[in-house]
Structures are given as C-alpha cells and as structure tokens.
Length: 413
Image 1: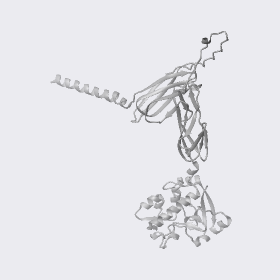
Image 2: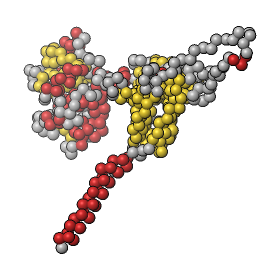
Image 3: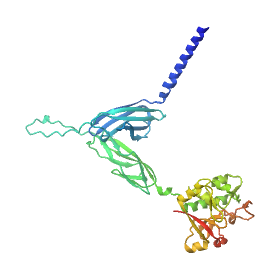
Image 4: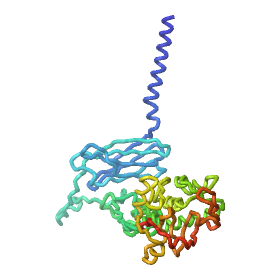
C-alpha cells in the first residue's frame, strides 16, 4: 500500500511539474510575435534596415542605447496592416569607432509583441574622390561609381501639431539614402483644406487632420500626420459663453414647464442636468450662476456660493480658488443705477446683493434670475412657487435698480 501511495505521489508531482512549466514558460511567450531585423546596407551616409514579422504589424518603435546604457526611443510608427518595413537610420545616430546598439519593439494587430536588440557596425568613412587620369593613362584604369536610385526616404517628424491661434507654420525635412542619389521630391497633402505643403513648408489652414507625404522619383515615400487645432476655441471661460449657458438653461426650464422655486442649497450640489433628472425640479437664486459656471468649466459640482447680505459664503475653499482663476471679485456696495452711470456693470456680471440674493446681469437693465422675481407667485422661501413661462429670464425687475449690490464676480474675458 505504501509503495502504491508513493507511486501516485510521484505521478502527481510529475503532473504539477508539467503544469508549472506550461504556466511559467509557454504561457508568457504565447503573446509574442516572431520578428526579424536585417541590416540591408551601411555606408557613410547611414544605414538601411528591414523589420519583418510573421503577422500584420500595428505599431513599431525604434530605440537607441545611449552612453548611460539606456535605450531611448527616437522613432515610432502606427501604420497598420504590413509585415515588412524598410527604415533608414541617419549617420548622426551611428558611431564611427564602435558598434551602435538598437532595439525595435513591434506589436501586431492582435496585441502580441516582440522585442529585438540588434547592432550596426561603425560608420564607414566617406570615400575619397578618385583623381582624373592623365592623357597617357589607360581609360580603363579609372573606376567609376554610378549614382543609384533612392533606397529609402524619411522625414524628421512623423507627427506634427499646428495651431491656428499659435504656430501655424512648420518645416519638414526629408532625408534620402544614399544622399547622393539623383531624384526629385514631390510633396503633397491628403487634405489641403486642413494644411498645405510647399517644399516641406507646412501651413495650417483649418482645424482637422491631414497627412503630408513626400515621394522620390522612384516612388520611395515617407509621411507625417499633421493635426491642426485652434486653441482660442478652447477658451470657454468667457462672459459671452457664460451668458449663452444661462440662456440655454433658462430656455430648457421654460420648455420643461414644471420647475418651482424652493430655497434649498441641495440644488447647488448638482449640475443642471442632475437637477433636471429629479422628480421635483427646483431651483433657488444662487443655483443659476453656479450652474452656468459649471457648464463653462469654471466650477465643478458642489463648488457653489451665495450672498448672506454682508459677505460671499463659499460652499468650500475650492469654489473660491477656481473662481479666482478665471474671474475677479469686485466689492461695490452700490445700486445698479449707480454702477451703470459709472460704466461698471457689464452683461455677465454675477451680482451678490445686500438683501441675500444672487443673480446675473443680462444687459439692458434685465436679469437672469432664479429667485422669486421669475416666479408666478411668492409664497415664501419654502413654498414650491412655480416659475413663469419665460424660465429664468432675462427679466425686467425695476425694484432691483434702487437696491444695493454688495459684490460683483466678473469673468476676466
């Protein structure tokens, strides 16, 4: 019986050993793709390599080992659907007195990857020119080196970003191997409505993406993806955008037809879309400017504020911090009539009043107001008083013109 148990135990150990070999050896390499790197040519102008794989490649990255022994990436390509690619490595990346080590990492369309380390021999010297022969010399004694076609072409950039509100123009430089090959270069843009190119000079035209390509006479080519943006359109924290947001909110409230005033600060912890999702849709005066500032990216949810009649009460420190990033707080303690006479009341100004009220000046003596002034009735702060069909305005409220505004919050742009 003991011998039998020992035999079973040995069999079990053997099975466990096989399982561990499969798990720690075979499994990790199941996600590898077979690849190969060949150095096709090497001369004083640089090297040409060929990278190949046994499945379609989706990304390729090239690294060079620096003097500290670290591999630094200097090239990447996210072109998809090929199994072989020829690349040129410029002479300035190669050493003249030792081998240079490189690493290539490729990933195929299934997410499998491969890493290959290879080296390129030291860079040959540039050949000396052979002097012309004298008349007495034999014509066959002068060797000639014919100029060949372009073997490869590359660009100094493979991704380029331009900005209609900043850097609109950039130059691309093409490098051919061998560098003495006779060729003409043709530049083109896949979408000239986005960016144009002339002899490598790329000029932004409109927001979008395009591909700039360069091609030699024998159809060797390289390309660069160009993205054009307009940074000015990203500036959302402006008075005009704020007013547009308030208008949209007011129009939606008028369209919903089921909003009521209720003096609860809980609505100042929600975005406008969350408030709309509630079964009982309510608002109070400070909610409207808070919702508008959230919409344009000045505040985040819960970063609200209101007037208690003598100061601004901030829901948390982040609310004040974010407001001061994009706006200034002006203490005025004057009526709208006085401020208008001074020219110091502008459309989009958030007004915090001495009678514990908050609203936004819309211009032309009108207000965006989520207080009782926009309601059908006024039965008190904790009654569900329905808003008028105009939503939150802009409304005319003549009584406001003689009351005092304590502070103004004004966006900087």
